[in-house]
Length: 463
Ligand code: ATP
Image 1 (cartoon, protein in one colour):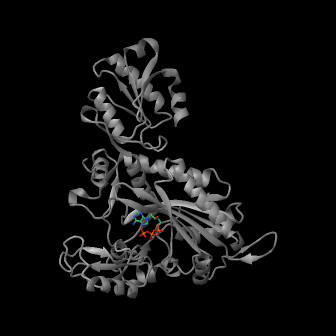
Image 2: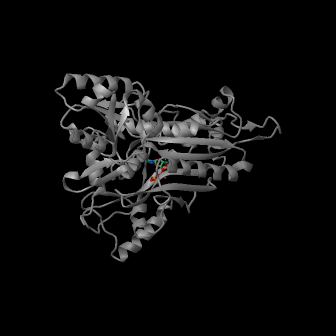
Image 3: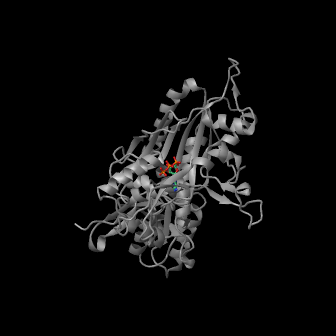
């Protein structure tokens, strides 16, 4: 049996069908940055909206925020990012490829996450002595020692372009939660929330990643969907378990089976954290389980640090007991682009043989970029085209739809399968007489006749 190269196939489908393009291609490309085309944008927005619905709309205890990408530079000193948000870099002296030391060690089964550089170099030396350390690109054994490489991205915002010195550098946020901590007090004062409560936001983050080779899995510009839940420390255990369950169930709700997602427990915790688990998804395209979301118990570190560095009192006073304390935090942090990749990877299927062969994206129907495509059976019959247009104009008021009269019906089905459209509606001569149309289901390819007047209800039931 021919082995399917899922990474290659998904990447090329994503480009060919207008989901995701490599950035700045006409100038030769710009590594680890991607642009989202029409269908990619729709898919990404649907995933974002599904998250927002579950995390904000359906909850009484979480409110929203959209904080700025640029923040006061002291934010990142207080959070420790300026001093220690870095990854260990190893270079191949021969071909100049860059690698992450922790990733190299993990391939040899050595747990290297968040380990000090001395530990990493000692382990790399052992591999070197055993002649096992090689560049995965060119095979050379001439690799450098590991050194710290800061992931912070700097800008000169507010200063002249030629004056990017250490004192006047501002940073593009490396994670969205920084904005949540800084707006915790304003949110508390301006909304009617009481502890425990959460603040959720979706937005861009920037990291100068050392290596970014796996399509949109790890990019230098990406979006996060983060929620920070503020609470009294006595509630931490109970609420942490609750949030783990909430986030796990969200993946199940959107089609993931218990066999393709799993928990990964961090052995090495940041000094302020009491528990940290990731949800990992088994990527066909990456050949194994990889992190898509982290759920972390962060103690009172964040607000204490911002209190200390800003001189502002960020404590909370319980209105009933009068107790004053710095709230502890549970964080749920998912990568939106990584979830786009996950849903693409999950949905991607190649089915059938010969003439019957098709590639289909079997997204959960609610996440599909286009919900229904409307076709006239024949392009050169004005009465069919007019009826199909009329149905399209009706449906588009409620659903993201597409009108297509190019090529034969078989070709149109294939195209819609490749962008994951759950329903195709074909208008034929019977439609003009009897007022019904053929609705074809993406997954089963079954067709049924549905009254035009009942179409909206029909889709609403499924979507
Ligand atoms: P990693 O160990 O893979 O570098 P991390 O543990 O540093 O990731 P977090 O800081 O916990 O990641 O970020 C939370 C989420 O944000 C991740 O689960 C991931 O989905 C997403 N994310 C982090 N970095 C990137 C990136 N460079 N590109 C795309 N998504 C990212």
